[in-house]
Length: 378
Ligand code: IMP
Image 1: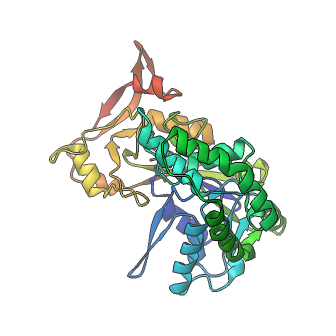
Image 2: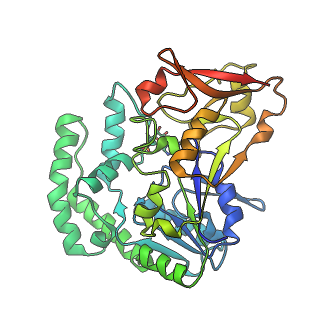
C-alpha cells in the first residue's frame, strides 16, 4: 500500500474514519497531521461505541503506532481523557503505541476563552467548534505559542505564561468583558498534564522517516475537509489549519516525494457545519423535503458539537477543485445508500457567476456566495 493520505474532499464529515480503518490494516503507522479536537469520529467495535477526537483510530489495533504530528494542536485534558477511556476498555496497553510530537502547539485555556468570546461578539459568525483551534494556530504563527516541549519544562512554561497571559487577560477583560484567567491555577493544572504526557513525547518526523527507510507503510489521516482549508477553503468560513495535501508535509515532517497516493473521501451529497456559503444547500429542516431526507436518513449531526449539519445536493464542481488542489489519485464515495428512496437526483456540474458559467468552485466566500448552481437531473 506504501504511503497513503486520506483527505476529506468536501467540508468535513465525509466518513473518513471508516476508510482510515480499512487502510489501517495495511499500515504500520497512522499519523494525524493537522487540526485538533474539533474533529471527531465514532467507532463501533462489536457493541461498544468509542468516540475519538485526537488519537487516530489505529490505536484500537494493537501493534499499530499512532502519531500526533507537529501540525496538530492538542488540548492536554482531552488527550489524557481519551487515553484513560481507551485504557479502561482494554486498548492501548502499550504506551509506546502513541507518539506526540514535541513541536506541536498546546491549546491553552485562553485559546478556548477567546474562541468562545469572539464567536459570542461577532456579527458574522464562523460557527467554530469553540475548542480554541483558531486562536492556538494564530499564536503559533504569531510566535507566541506554547509547544509541548515548553510545557514539560517548568521554568520555560512559567516564563512563557508570564509573557503571554497578561496580554490575553487584557483582551479578555477589556475587549470582550470576560473574566481573566489565573496564572497559578493554569501553571498547576497544565504542569500536571505535562507530567502525564511526557512519556508519549517524541519526534514525529524522525520516527516516520526511519519507518520509511525500513519500508513501512504509513497512513496519513486528515481531519476536516478541503473546503475548510485555511488557504484553499471558503475563507473566512474555514478552520485554521491546512486540511489539504500540503498540510501532510508541514504537519508531519515527511517529504512530498514519499507520498504515494491521495484518496479523497466524499459523500454522495454535501453537508457543512457552521457558517459560510454552500451553493447546493437545500432546506433540510422542513419534513417532506429532500434536504430533510438527507439530514434524517443520513443522521447528519456533528460528533463534536452535536450541531445539525446543513445538507444539499452533490457538487461535482466543488469536487473538481478538491481533486485539483490535492492531486487526488483515488476517490471513495460514502453514504450512497442515503439516496435510496429519492425519486429524482440532482448533481451540480457548475455555476453561473456574474453572468458567466464555470465548471469549478471559485475561491473565497464572496464569489462562492454569488454562485448559482447548474444541475443535471436524473
Ligand atoms: P474551528 O475549527 O473550531 O475553528 O471551526 C471553524 C469551522 O470549521 C466551523 O465552521 C466548524 O463547524 C468547522 N469544522 C471544524 N471541524 C470540523 C469537523 O471536523 N467537521 C466539520 N466541520 C468542522
